[in-house]
Image (tube, rainbow, N blue to C red; front, side, top):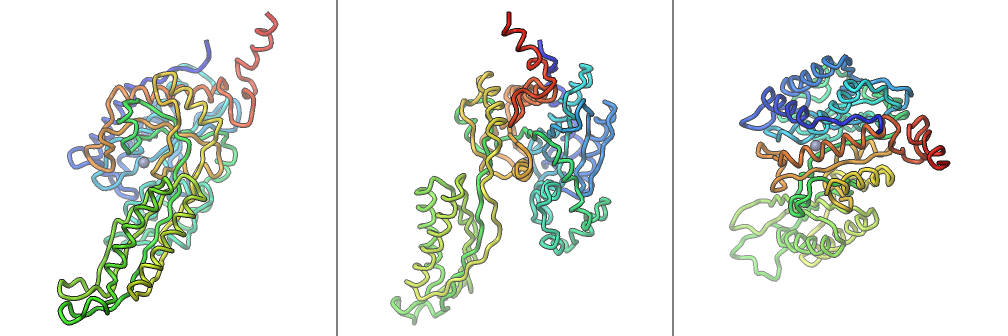
Length: 436
Ligand SMILES: [Zn+2]
């Protein structure tokens, strides 16, 4: 028997229900970062930490930490985010934070003094729902946030990010002081999250390991043609910006299919937008995703090539404007394998899946060996009040997450780049076992 205690999924489900009751049920979760609803959600985490005798510590970026000291200062960090989109779901982010809390609670109740210091963290403003910058707190903690790029951000009411953070006691200029040092002595990061897509439900599987997050290239293609009279302008002399954009959009779909990626042309703004005028301008948004960095770069090159030739064919000018980019991020192979085998043991997915959405884990993985656990989303729905997962699948996923986390915490599960970590029970036992 190992020292790793079992987590109790029912307590996580009870905390999730309590969180939903206090921060918006009928119309969905009301926990947009830097608002009173978000603070109410965090009050629940603070109260639960206090119940197990732990202080809630807020860092310079507003990330909220609970820390259970172990024999070593090096940490295992378990985290996700309590913030939501407006009218969000009950599970996105909250599941991972409250499951992390349960790991600390189980260790404390079982009187286990862990090998590693074990922390739960609620990353601030994962969603970027109010100011448009996702992964704010986790990016600050990894030292990868460009303060000047976010300083001027405002919400829909014209309130600045700096003012909103200030109201929550966070000084924008202090964000870079967020605990890079903490992550520097973190040996592993684990995050449990809902899939937010249809794969696990379609395969009727309760849980999967995540091997990494997909890369993103997001930009706008601006086609400039010539507005002209619908009746008196012959077809062969037109410079129709909309048709150049439309032909490009159809080609972009084929490019995604060719490269085993995803492409979305989700927004098209046409000027002047009048039924009797040939379109003089068209702005097409392009969002490209691929798990492979080279393939993503090739998709982008091909899209730009197609856009240039479609613009030229119709005598339009083309302008390209970058919006956002994130490289594909592979998680730690050994940690992913530990999660994968724990999933397979309980009838979960044999192969890890790649996340099409970005998560705090994407940021943390830049510094720390990282893995994620996914559970299914009914109908693939998320960011909506009807975001659900079957209770039995939630229980299975929480158990798998808990097993891997407690195993690492007490030194029974090998950490990346090591044999079994020093002081682990099994490491000490094995030579004598071999001798018998
Ligand atoms: Zn999330």
